[in-house]
Length: 327
Ligand code: MTE
Image (cartoon, rainbow, N blue to C red; front, side, top):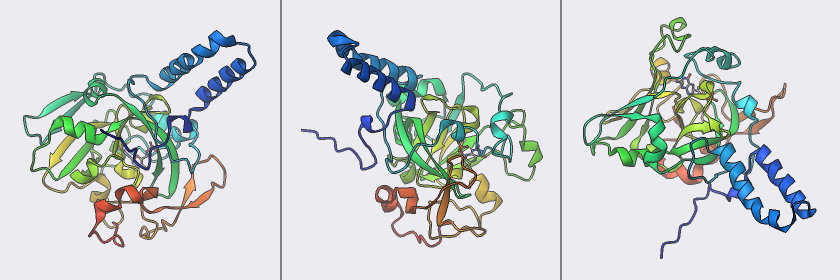
């Protein structure tokens, strides 16, 4: 008999519900309780829920479960989508959402894949959900190296599912990701000519195959907004946010450890592993605490957790690595 034991970071679907669906449910339940909808209606409530959920959560979703970190509230959607790091468009976080407006996200969005057992491939983002067997929702903590943090419901699929379908070369030890390189899209790139564009990032194969490593195609039940990395990005919740590369156009399985844009630019500040670690200071600031993105003039400060709170799940990946030298 196969018994599926959910991993520690998974909680029941009922524990986290988007606000408006939650309120819809409440209204329906209240009406049912008051007898307003009567018995027949009471039977149709689950159906109504299902419809509401699908409408809200599944712009291209056919399989859903939710994962949460119940210890912190969700970041408000308008904050998570208006305070962004996307240097291809602007250095000013509050300007990115405006600067992406002119960008017409290319459809179909193609992703080049190299370093496979077989020949190179080109994937179409729209086919990915089917390829990996559906989308799911995950609520993750997200901690930027600049010491601000948020909690975001992402829609997407485990990176491991994609890797399994792609069949990398058995020699592959790393995965390298790349963002678009076109300056006509990333209108700020020309203003930063000393940046080693395009934005690249990498993971070890072991990290990439970890069940927490996630490819997001949506957030808050919608397609990924352009400022958050449309149409597809990486989310690695136990690492500093710069590892979570946006708007991916290329995935390559490599034997050599890839160097990300930040590591190329300042390797003493931004290393390959970049695991969230409150004990290792950034050369220019402490990483012991973080400012919660809560819209307050003086944001709430909380202690930063080792591996961003995912220590139990990921610490085994780093046995033998000197965690006092994170960068
Ligand atoms: N990806 C690209 N292509 N360009 C970027 O500038 N910034 C990174 C990461 N991915 C970045 C990127 C950094 S520093 C962070 S903190 C997160 O995206 C921010 O993601 P968010 O804007 O969705 O919060």
